[in-house]
Length: 256
Ligand SMILES: [Zn+2]
Image (cartoon, rainbow, N blue to C red; front, top):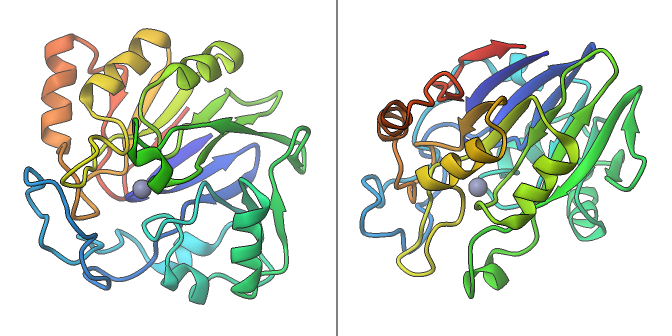
């Protein structure tokens, strides 16, 4: 398997001979106005997003067998993705609501991940997530992650836009992933706290799965990020878990 970080939560997962594009945000740098009300500690709070260009050509990125959209926030499924992706491409989503949204954008091969869902011989399992803690959860809405399983591959768990909570622990206990992709930019609005994982959340993931490789994505790409790659790397070093916590730059990839 190979996992390539593209930008934000956009990743390309090559698994058991198939290529999956996760959470496509495909616009050029600065295409969208800033997410409103970013936390005061967000260093690029006033800037348009995406904050960076794509690290490789669009053609490379969309040359995949299927797409997985964990939820439809604009940093996971954007206007450019709707325009660029071929309308017949297979798209997996978390629920009927998201399926309807994506079908309404002209896509006609959209499937909700249910018990027993597979793509060819690859098992796809929807996992739960909480896009924040407390009051903000209602506003943030439903999200999911996904586990990939195949007899010839290691198990991968893409956690999606979730903070650390007992649900993530349960998914780790159930699926025993070898590789875990976490969204770790600690994005925050002025109020409501972390919307995705911060460094302490990543540490909890490590403690729950000390033998797994953890790949931190969803960093430094949308204006409300508050945890930099540099800070996460030095935190991992300080905790002695640098070999387990990988913090890719955009375009970087890993083979397992
Ligand atoms: Zn996000």
